[in-house]
Length: 146
Image (cartoon, rainbow, N blue to C red; front, side, top):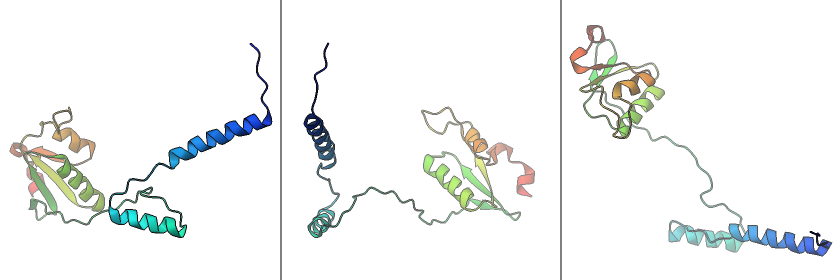
């Protein structure tokens, strides 16, 4: 097989086509979430202002208040759970993260229930993984209460 010699112009034509192809991928129209956003984008474009649309993620926390089920005189908090959904598990983790010095303990009706139908992890295992003391309702240790 013999290779065809290409000229410098051929390389430039190829490079320009490749550049145009890449550029066209980025020139696809932006789908705005509202007409107002679209109007603002039109204003920015008209003024020649460059922008990126929804290209940045900024984390935030919404302040909530946690009301434990039981507050004991020894400053131990007991949270009683029958069914324990993902939102409640996230809440407990957030409370522990923002208040590392408080003592929250879980009391379960059925600690060996799995956290979801698709998971093998039980409520008890989840607590152990996250260093949260737990017990079955029928086996609450007396030293937790006194």
